[in-house]
Amino acid sequence: MNTLFDKIWDAHVITTVTDGPTQLYIDRLYCHEVTSPQAFDGMRSRGIKCFRPEKIYCMPDHNTPTHDQDKPIEDPISKAQVDALEKNANEFGLTHYGMLNKRNGIIHVVGPERGLTLPGMTIVCGDSHTSTHGAMGAIAFGIGTSEVEMVMASQCILQSRPKTMRITVNGQLGKGVTAKDMALYMMMKLTTAGATGYFIEYAGEAVRSLSMEGRLTLCNLSIEMGARGGMIAPDEITFEYIYDRENTPTGEAWEESLAYWKTLKSDDDATFDKEIEFNAADIEPMITYGTNPGMGMGITEHIPTTIGMSDTEKTTYLKSLEYMGFVPDECLLGKKVDYVFLGACTNGRIEDFRAFASLVKGHKKADNITAWLVPGSWMVDEQIREEGIDEILAEAGFEIRQPGCSACLAMNDDKVPAGKYAVSTSNRNFEGRQGPGSRTLLASPLVAAAAAITGTITDPRTLM
Image (cartoon, helix red, strand yellow):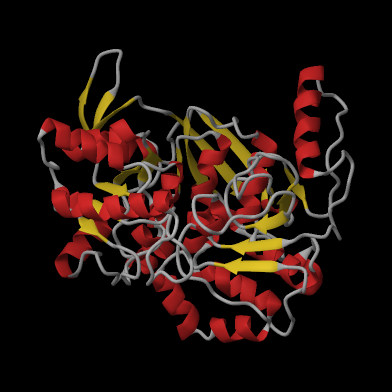
């Protein structure tokens, strides 16, 4: 009768307050430089140490430059935050992967690839896209700074139990359609508030067919539908991915863990608070046209008109289109763009670089395009070079930058100028998200690659 979420949640409950929150044990706390300083200050002011420091991992990612990381960070605010994280981690005896450390990168990329994120875990971080880790069959969600301090002090957190939702995607994805398109399609259908208050389990043939990287992308975007988090039951794809990674159990411990992980699935008669189904055949490569991730459409479609909208909805909608420089019923194919960004905790993994390279191979970067290709970690950077992807990209006129969050958000040097269009594989297209006045079109690595070599919004299927 239990869902996957129920099984993991119930196994981590310490106490439950009557008509109140649950005290939940946390297996892993990830800390980056932006949301942790106040938490460390709070611990310091109370004169207490971290309860279980071996469960906490720290690394900078938001503020790190993606070039010349061997030199001091120029921006004083970024430098202060990155330096503070290192100082705090050392003072409190926490594991810290600083810039140029081979284990550094975006925290939501490093966790899974280093075997720190495992099935059955509860995982938190002061970052909304912590939902990424749910792809491994874990309960993972973002928390606020005061909650970061709570976990540091007690390895527990007070949380209200969310409702459960299962989204099933039947059938197989078509040519050129990726996990990113699946997520953007869901957001288009459900809106950015459609899963508010729920924890999502993704299921169905299309989901089971995704690689681990694709699953991480899908769960990463759960938060953009308003969900508390997203998760996928672990299976042979998960176990094969985890096996023999740096922090994965070995020997007898592996066999014991594997036996437990195989029980982590929703029972056949499990009841969810809400069930939604989609057909994979209905999904084509997607692109956003507005200023929230739910304002997306199939790449061959036209921007929706205002027919059927209330006056209030119409005003908000037209304001968003005005910011983007678009009009209702416009087709975006052939629209000239200025920047292409491949990276972020959404699409900065090796599979994303393979996809991008597969499309640009034999072509040249368009002259009007500034391209930022940013690996999600130093491990991804190493894989790119081992597989010769760097040579394919260099031949096509692209260069690879150093790992970091980069142009996902305007907290580092990689900012899109005002009025310029960026086809971005990141997760948010809010006004100014990639730089003051920037205009973001969210898309998959394949759509980004197609734009990078044509200089315009292009259906990648026409180049495959």
